[in-house]
Length: 328
Length: 281
Image (tube, rainbow over all chains, first blue to last red; front, top):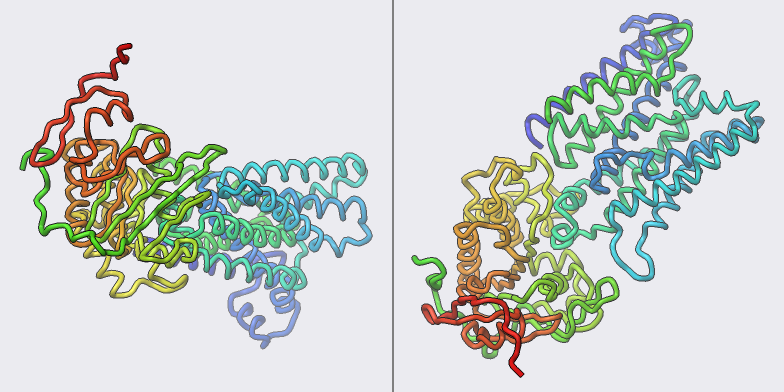
């Protein structure tokens, strides 16, 4: 890793720390840093300590892991598919998760406790269909990036059509679906964190193991193969790991797919190539951006909350375009 | 040194009698997109030997080389590396036996020369292991040998075509494999850069490396190769030392050109006269 890359990661960690403190401190009740420490160590009582420890802490931690997971998923997909437009949306995960969630919200609103599980299941089923469709057929051949993207767009269209059908059929209840689709962390707590964490862990470990193979894949399939890496296998493994991360993120935070597209680009423009760097930086920057955006979403127009998905786009796009212009 | 004279040989090529080949390919059939692109080709490369694979466009040269390298699976035939069938070797094991220099790989923006060459150490590194002293030594030796140590920290994307090709050869050298297979290593290069690459490959062979390369330029192939394999429509039309293989009849039959062959420093040189004349009845 170059000095510049270490600097980007260090800067990202500092930003994440500040955003996390702000996220714990600000809201309907402002809490001082001293009280935050006291609340986190369990040495304080009172309503402010309860708010920090039971409401803001799980939500902040969830923003950290969801942001990190989306950044990682995007970096994995852009590396594996050699396509700068690759993001969780492109491999059908987002559309699958949306269908799972909307089906519960509109068809079985009584069992809304099942919503995260349904979204996770929908996302994973969609990703599995994509991987199966793109896998080498009886005639052999490799799994190219374009093949995965085309399969992803097709499967995504299928799930989006199913979501639309459900929303048209139960248009009386559609507003609930619209709110979920916009994405956000409103009212999320420890149970969501517990549900998503294992998948995030699996996806993160897989990402770590894929760092060097992805660097070799960036040299082209022939050179990667000559250096002992099976290009098709790496591509499928990275797609699967990204799908697990993105599906778990969608299950607890709705659709925030844009983060997965832009954050890896920011990391690449700021620090250059190399997946050991790109994966770590995308995770750290993704977490920092989502924690910051969620804090602003909660506090800017308090007591009403802005949709954080809209806010991440509003914050991310100008910064991204600025970097893009500078490096053109 | 005159252009296309024979490069100075540091030592005579080792005798091929009784030597076991580093790479031995025979009866190779490769099917791509429903067509047999290579039909029963053979290729043998010994240590210290440079074998050039030549032939017209679409003859199956690159396909033969890629199948020999284990990058595409042949439909039939045997590929043997140091006596072991390639089908029984793992991809990483194979990566320690042969390096492959692709024609024009895409390289990520911002990738430095050193980082690119370090990729050649992948077959020697565990999935999570960091490069150690031996890897750094191998990389700097390879960069010096290929003449890219002067711009080690530059981004590969800022280099000229010839420099980039030398970086790819340095990457292959960092692999420290006993054989190098190169697919058109001089394509799209100017004369000076092409000769530099060709002479580098020749001297690597003289140092004991087994080298097979696909070449478009017949004069260049004749200048540096110990053996020439002429592929025509997926089959070996001729094989042997350059002087035994290249003659006007072969040029007419395979390339469909009328050519005059002269001998320069004991190696054939080609003067193309024009497209093949229609046969008189």
